[in-house]
Picture 1 (cartoon, helix red, strand yellow):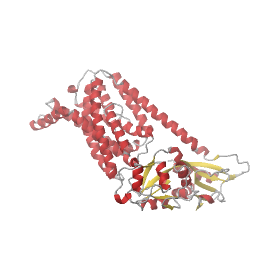
Picture 2 (picture 1 turned 135 degrees about the horizontal axis):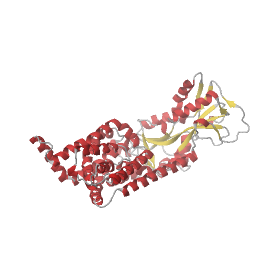
Picture 3 (picture 1 turned 180 degrees about the vertical axis):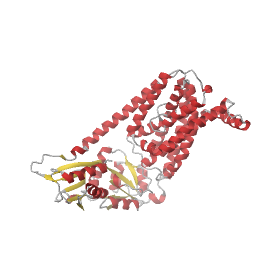
Picture 4 (picture 1 turned 30 degrees about the vertical axis):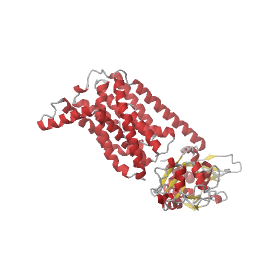
Length: 531
């Protein structure tokens, strides 16, 4: 995550935390629409901790109300009359309203984190927010204020707040809707909703600290979180003031319409991107696993051998456990595997060839088993967060001799300024033999066809060796198929590069159409790769 991204997301958080349009949805969907590739390990902790800014904003805005509630609450305990004062009762109601959210957070944390990385799911939840707002406006009589609240009203709004643990279900929208279904007027439901947010955001922030401590390169990430918090505080304070004034005269229908339109935009963009990717790589259905890419007039017969000889390139080394597992699953079926350089694949007499992407001239049958993408990796000690094609080309051409020079050339590409020791190191670019699939993809998509060998570099035979080389050298960086990624290295984004150009299909190429157990084996591989 860059500093600019942190500022933009802080603004988004401040604007949307209190408006009933789901801040969590916007923190997921805005990066997706803008094509940002923020590391997954940073997405959830940032989304939770940036709420600290809006937490401070709501505390400052409602400080007088909070102080009255706190004083009355403890005075009631001392006097042994805990429910006599209306403000003391509000304190108890806030505690009661928080319980459902605490329970749902404890039980659903893993599912929520997964949803934070699913734009389509978030869009559908956002439509759910719109439905809640329309329901509230339709059935509410709006005849009660906050001082007429009962314990059941508080618990009811707490249950609605528990729904908002998922990104896309607006916390303010759902809780205000819950209050309005109990016939509270809009401003009163909104005020109690904002007060309800305080204990929930405090608890979420405390719980997320453990996730923050696990974030790779935390020292460089923490300042960006802090910037996002400050921005969210300033914008959030103004948002509260505006919304309370708005609700005295207007309904939630406009917010519901916005939620539907924004969700539709996200779904449409996602569908367009999916179609664009499908134009490059079209996954096959199980009922038609194998397709003919050309009309093989010279090919006759079918392929069903046992044992089956299988060749694969170094870019698919990670696939080997699945090869044997599927053979065992089929039963009474054996395979003989060979790891071959890509230049030997075309001339190989092996019955099944597995490779990442199609050869230049494909005249045989092929099965698309799945897809994979190219990932740029650096040593965890490297503060590089994104790489532009221009910077990559300059490093490869030895025009940038040190990492310090790289940071000076593109300061936004780094999370922080490199220290003096790291700045003096020469970028050690690791690459593959010229015809290997990752090398070809990197040259075409990032290097504009230019060679990758002028600067200090190592020739790496495969993905496992690339992980070891980069993980063991602070100055090293390289690229590999994403399924090789481990915790010993760190992925950085490639800015200015269309993600579609970094993807290729995983192909099974055969001399004739597979049938019988060979076809069953390919179907098994497809299921393993696409769970």
